[in-house]
Image (tube, rainbow, N blue to C red; front, side, top):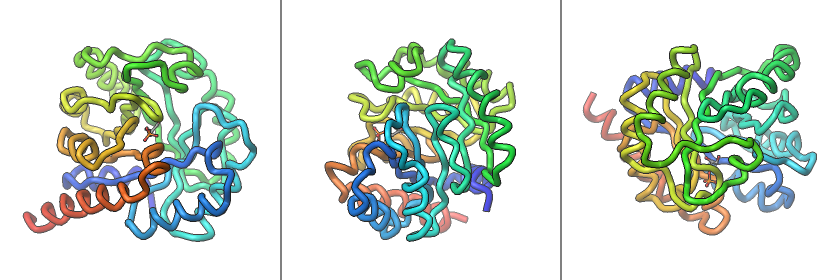
Length: 254
Ligand code: 1GP
């Protein structure tokens, strides 16, 4: 199954998806990782994203292995750099950090990773990664050495996403950064949504079901939840219920 095709098909119908982000650096306890994997499976989430801005452990492969041994949910790599290519995953977001002006993350790391990726069976999803300011310096802003787009510069974000689409990128990921103080506003999501036709992924700081719903209603095709599940695993059930209801209402209106 192609992850991108699934996203495109759902986007065409107006259906929504959920991804749970697993940061390998925070998944060193196998029992906790298994708990998260089971929680995600019980709540029928659509994808796992695996990766992080700074992976200091060597357990990326182990995280993918644990997920794949226990559930059939596709694993999508969300790499912070070219070292995070794990061939046993299903797909990889080939991220170009288009909100920034760091050539290494626009094309440099890609040149290093491309020949390695070509020798895997990973589905490559060319993705425009757009960082939005979330109130404080996030790890991703710091490590990437880029300035996120100010959260009230809607047109700047929309034009950035549009340029990414015109360059051939197949999805846009609007991110406030993991553990962001402020999630991306509905107005920002809606403005970017109107500017592009490719699937729109939104994440960073989504820690209530209302925030998740707001993002989906504003036009996100997929929301990504990471940090919040550490403190409140029940949140996933609340969010997946909302997504289920949303998708059911689309089915009913067919
Ligand atoms: C980060 O969008 C993801 O890149 C998820 O963010 O950990 O804040 O949910 P959180």
